[in-house]
Image (tube, rainbow, N blue to C red; front, side, top):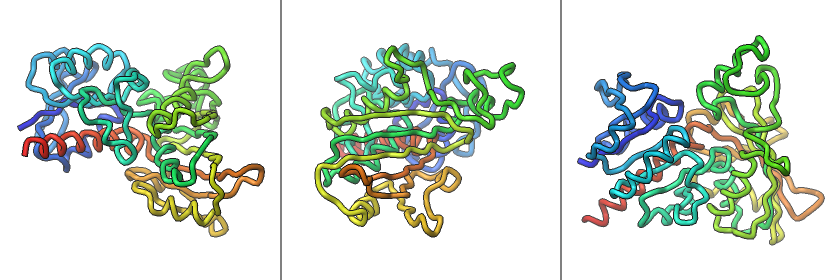
Length: 327
């Protein structure tokens, strides 16, 4: 039986990953690893699993590894594992833009996984955006602008703690300013030109995933006082002429997309309705009156669709591919 390591098993994304694996890929043995949760017991597949220290990853007996921990953990442990033939799926940003590492959303570019021992999982808001954009490829996108409304859980457990902190700055653990009853118009450190690290992720990762190096991308990322569920307003400039109905039809036919687009009846995607689903909700579709462009609003569960489920789909592809290759 092959073994998969879940590194960062007790984090928000790690727990979602275990929820998925609890009822999927039963042919895999699962081991749990962490740094701050070593020795913790986790109920998994009707047994009590113990979180092992990350240093134990070097002891062998692992075929696949899913990293849902910090960038520092990925940087330290993935290269030696990959050099020994362990296929590693990394949710951190460390490997995403490396030329020899595929950045994968399986329903878009899953075949890029083949032949690689390190596969990068994209940024959460990027995943939902490119899933919607990919549906519009027949209309030839040339540029898009994304404005994100990202939930507190995108910053982990400490982000959720800060969301509930009502006493101002004194007890904040994650954000520079209070998030409760507030909006923070920056995510990550700002670079010299004023764009933040999070905005750079959207700009650079989307081009790589869609294999559109000349695609023009503009991004603005904000943190909003929502627990789970990222929203992204997207304006997409298209080369081909289109109607809104054509856009709706393309989105309706796209895998992993659910269309909620009847604004006069107050039907549009919301974070509360997309939680705990693997889908990207899309709605509020309108034609940009200033250009040959379309507006749309996308919503997804950032812990599931934007992280753990995408990593699971990568793992599923790898396992099935290996089985077929060995058949």
